[in-house]
Amino acid sequence: MDRLAIIGGRPLFGEAPISGAKNSALKVMAASLLTEETLALTNVPRLADVDMLLRLLEQHGVAHEFNGSSLSLSAKEITSTEAPYDLVRKMRASFNVLGPLLARERQAKVSLPGGCAIGARPVDLHLKALIAMGAEIELDEGYVIASAPNGLKGAGISFPFVSVGATEHVMLAGVLADGETIINNAAREPEIVDLADCLNKMGAKVSGAGHSKITITGVDKLSGADHEVLPDRIETGAYAMAVGATGGELTLTGAKSDLLGAALPVLIETGLEIEDTDKGLRVRKTQNRLNAVGIITQPFPGFPTDLQAQFMALMATADGVSTIKETIFENRFMHAPELSRMGANISVNGQTATVRGVERLRGAPVMATDLRASMSLIIAALAAEGQSMINRVYHLDRGFERLEEKLSNCGALIERVGG
Ligand code: UD1
Image (cartoon, rainbow, N blue to C red; front, side):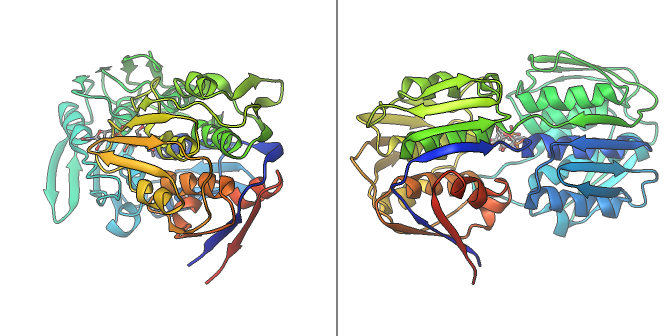
């Protein structure tokens, strides 16, 4: 199993390219199931999660060609409407093939996604919404067996709380449904807007994406389209925090500050200088220790749960006490004990972590527990004195493209060790 060896204490300088957003790429890729024509995507990150979804799409009959970061997908014919356990369990986003398969083929058998280290993550909202749209759904031996013999129908869906995946799922199903679907309390993440843009280029009628009410007027057929995936706001925030932890100045090429939501004012409050330029986002640290700032994770435009772990690493050496409250996932502080192994002073009480900033962290062997937690350990290791060895980096390969290359080009001492 690969590990990452990092010798910390070196500031980062230069340019780091920001890749296309994983969480957007996965959803627009699923949209390829909705048309016989070719969906040509650009700015697609080469990540383990993207490969995993490609394997699933392939077995549904989707032909694909990757060329650099361009990916063309063509689902001329759906050859199988079954999404097997082995391909769905490793990545929850795979579950979102259910809606498009049901919309196009009127039937699907899709494995329930497995549990996940950061919490239970059920799919009840997805299923209730599809049922409201006329799907008949049975659960059998871990599979969702769904059919819509007369096709899906538009419906009014009011979510009791915000779910990114369920909002996207209803969009993917509603575009080919008969009539109008209205989603109330929809997620407002930039990836939702990106998916709506892509679907609209394919001939769909989706309006209101980015707001809490989305209206989808079903059409008979969708066509192919060209679509560029938006930049990854989580990678952007993580690299900005790496500068905050190590010092230096990075230009995050291709990044956009308006995608960061509440993370932008929070990072500025810590003392980081952040500026939009022609090339992307310039991030600079000019003070010795950053200011401690408290956060509460919230759906967009609130502070993203996907940056909570990295922010905790940043606060580990801030000047003062920071409280971090996680409201989206119930078990998302697994990085806290690992950061403590590096000398951080963190106490966790339920869904709240209190971080008392220390002057410096020390390198240590640590274990990555999930995707974003892995990045928090990288940030801490880059800032720490001495060497850290980060185990289980396969989590990282799911969501951060060419991480070692990007960081070493900016002066970090980071090396992948096999075995
Ligand atoms: C997506 C992102 C993930 C991010 C999360 C929240 C992708 C591939 N993943 O995940 O990186 O952390 O949004 O921003 O885009 N829930 C239910 N029932 C449901 C659906 C969700 O109880 O049917 C709960 C979840 O367990 C969680 C909360 O709702 O506690 C929010 O989850 P959701 O927004 O759906 O996250 P994902 O779409 O899985």
